[in-house]
Length: 171
Image 1 (cartoon, helix red, strand yellow):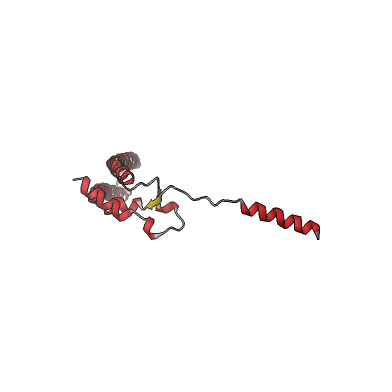
Image 2 (image 1 turned 90 degrees about the vertical axis):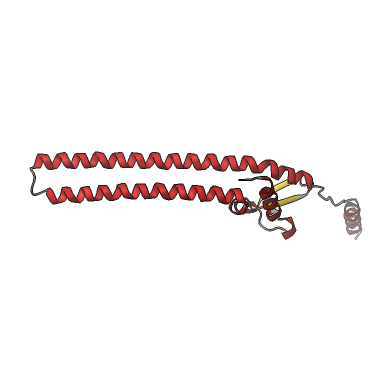
């Protein structure tokens, strides 16, 4: 029995001196994708990128249709022309297809580089505005909403940041 008393006394003393710690840091989160899609500058950028992508797709489809028509024309001539002439035309078509694929890869690569550069420029413009908002509201840590499992609705500053960005970035 004496051992139990000592044990409970030690536990009591241990819990008596435990202090709760509270964070002084203000942590909020933001949905950065929503910000990009709903700010005026972000909407303009996304529209520009979608238009450019659509133009590229149209060009590629036209070239692809041209190559298909060329292939069908060669197939129709197969029994009419000599075998050497047929092989020449097939090789010429293969070269055109290879060139088309290379141009397509270059076009996709250039589009991705352009897209990444424009998005980087947008973030370069937005970051000082967000930082200023954080300084004004004494925010220590800003997390992306994708990395937050659950949070208080009051900790979501997405709408406020969109308003600030729309005020400060004129396009």
